[in-house]
Image 1 (cartoon, rainbow, N blue to C red):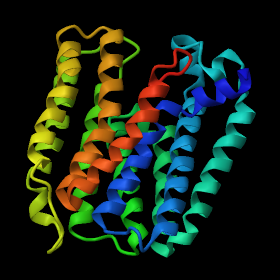
Image 2: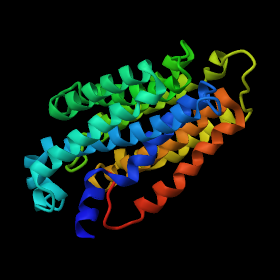
Image 3: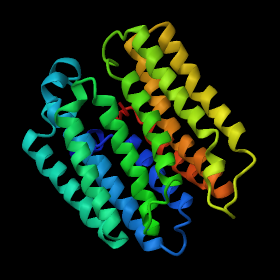
Length: 295
């Protein structure tokens, strides 16, 4: 049980549904269901593996920093060895690419690019100014991966959807850059502004939907509600940027990604987009487990 808990912590299990939500958004926007159900399921599994791999490699490359700042984590605490982390991370990356095969060449191509983006972020970009951009690129590719379930990338709608999600994650990643320390208020303000920009970019989304596809009348109202729900802890963290408040805001923003995907899906697939909210249940349940953490 201890080993299983350590691995669950290593892959950030509470956040895994956010990666699946990206795939669901892409598949719904591209009308991939039910005709391409096999491709959809295979890409859900592929995304789960690639996301988990990213978390493993994140902790592997950060193990010395975590030894100082987060000694309770699986690698610095010795519950998972560096060799075990490398083996698991490599196996998950390879599995992610192989699982994309049933969805076709475009999906495999995107999975390979996602592998490259994950390794580039974790090994180098994360501690540079380009770190948030690299993380946003990973989410951008993940949404496109979901869209590829239909065998197409659905331009320009596909690229625009991926851009919105990618921009949101750039802001969240920027907001979380110094979450273990006292954050600078100006940095938090800039990150929060970028998250707001991503929501504003979503407003004209119904104009991009393919002809004949429904758009829910609830979309703009849900988007505003999401902004307030994510924004409240963000504003509290900006007012008092202690690590606990910043981490709480980041956890809310990450959970908000599932809501964002669902809201965006209502703009391109109608009320069916709200089905993505089903992924909130496992995410909320896992976030309440005291022995797990999301950031």
